[in-house]
Image: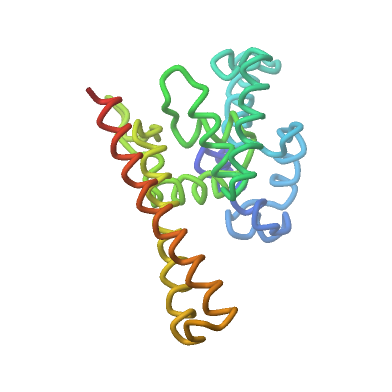
Length: 226
C-alpha cells in the first residue's frame, strides 16, 4: 500500500479535530486502522498531531533513518514568543475569538507580516481546520488579506496595513447600531419617562462617540499615509 501523502496527513489532522475515531479516519482514507493509530502516536507532539511535521519526519527517516531537527525557520526568540502570547491575550480580551487572535498576534510579530496556512498550522500547532476558520474570519473582517505566493500555487495571509483602521470603523458601526436601537426604544417608551430619558441620553452619547471615532480614524489614516 502506498505511503501516506502530505494531503493524507492534512486530512487526518482535520478529522482528528472533528474527534473522529481512528477506525472512521482509516475507513475514509482506505487504510488499516493500525496505520492511522501508528501515524498519530508517532507524530504527536505537545500541541497534538501536526501534519507538516509528520511528513517532514517521515521523509527524513526514509533518507537518514533518524528523527529530523526542528525546522529553524519556525523557532522564535523567547522575547518574541512572550510578546506574541501577550498580544494574543489582549486581543482575546477585546472580544476576538482566541484562534483568530493567535493568528493575528503571530502575523504582527513576524518580520514579513505574512504566513502560509501550512506555516500557521506548524507554528501554532493546531489543525488545518482551525487555521482555515480563523483566517476566514480575519479575511471577512478585512484584518488580513490573501495573496498568491511568488512562484507557487499556495496562498499566504498578510496582515493588512489598515487593520486598525478597519477595526475602529467596525467598532464605530456597532456603536452606531446600538445608538439607533436605544433611540427607537426611547421613542416607544416616550419622552419624559425615566426609561425613555435614559435611553435617549444613551443614544445621543453613543451617536457622538461613533461619529468621532470614524472621523479620528480617517484623520490618522491620512496622516500615516502622508
